[in-house]
Length: 116
Image 1 (cartoon, rainbow, N blue to C red):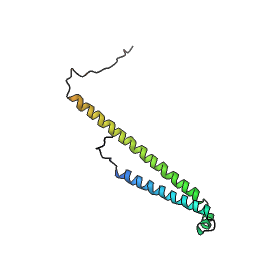
Image 2: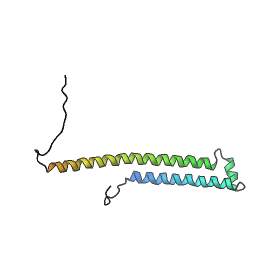
Image 3: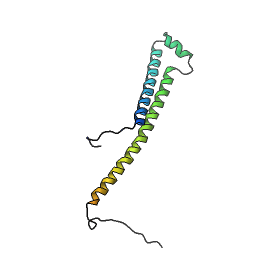
Image 4: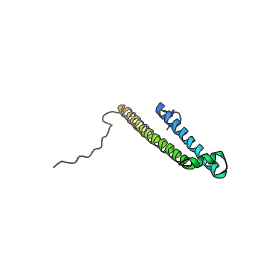
């Protein structure tokens, strides 16, 4: 991209990045809780962690994994849209450049294969 062009983000993209960011932050908080429980086994947090089916570390990794997968899906989807838009703009620019040329100057290279 050129330095003077602005990055265009849709509202959905902004919301999706915000949600996946918050989800990732939530996963990181659970990971920190899991590490605190491993260090201090006598805390109230450790007694709460023992009553859960999954401990904080497992929950943190799952939540963080979901956030990363969701962010990658959003990135890939919008990268594909941006690539289509870039190619469309390049085709438009090529047509504009060819408009100024004479028909005689335009050379079209094509192969023809005879059909039997």
